[in-house]
Length: 398
Image (cartoon, rainbow, N blue to C red; front, side, top):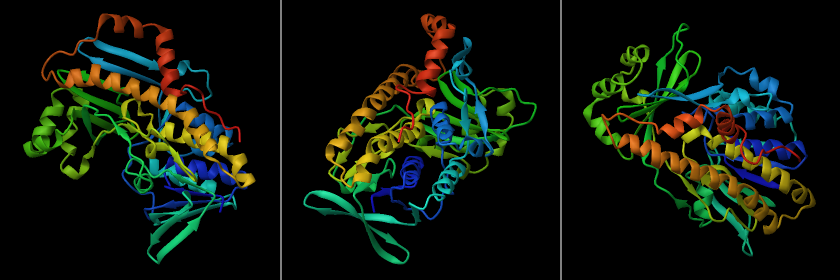
């Protein structure tokens, strides 16, 4: 086996697809038995849509049920501020595609299975790294049928923010402390609704509203560790709190929240590895860097990691020899874009989100210079480019 990928998420399946297309034998091990789980990484940015297009798969992807965000703004007491306009981007896909991640993963797995070199094993929980002379040469994993192992020239960890492989490899992430957590829930949407996707920062409260076709997906930002207090106060108190700053059409639908199980709690984290590799082992996606949900870039950066890894490592995998220098090239190419985005996220979290949440009941004031700036077309284009296409723009070359 040339490559063993641990984790059947967006990064793992994309890498598996890219390698299998070139005839490189690859096996993806996914711990869960299916993809039907509560995901929140549902935003496919233009950068990913361009990658899918390069693979000739855009028509099939766009056939999936989805919604689109072309603009994103912020509602405050000062009025509506348009922050980014994806329609200005020089791309065939000037929007963010919102698609349930279970559908996207099923799509990627189906496309990858078209290639004989690809294998996907569900319900495969990795428990050990196989090593020889200081080099990772595969993994040992557990299934319902018992223990199995796979040996590979390269092992890739794409198993998420709680990466088991990262732990087994003894690689410790550097963690930051985002000032908030997020409560995710849905409210019904009516065909006549005109509410745009965006953020609402009003009276010390903050919520993100995403239009998802038949429903709205809302992310209520709360102070870090604040869920216990909210839960103890009760669901009726939460509905009342939300109603105080949501638009009337949404406030009237809060009665549909009748059980706590309708609300998912996202503990916001942000971290990165100083070193993404060991001999025979590479980490990508959340296993290498956990992104804040600010701007919804996590899934997109994970997929870009996979594309860059395939671009750099395909030749070495075909030749049967992957060096640590090859793995270091992947990290060098992806570390600085990732850290740049994380630093921007940190500034937004500290200067805007934390500042707003710390002043409950007070008017949220947008600095005059910022209001002036985002009224400029160029500023909205640059922000849309940074969020939507990334710097640098990643393309499939292998």
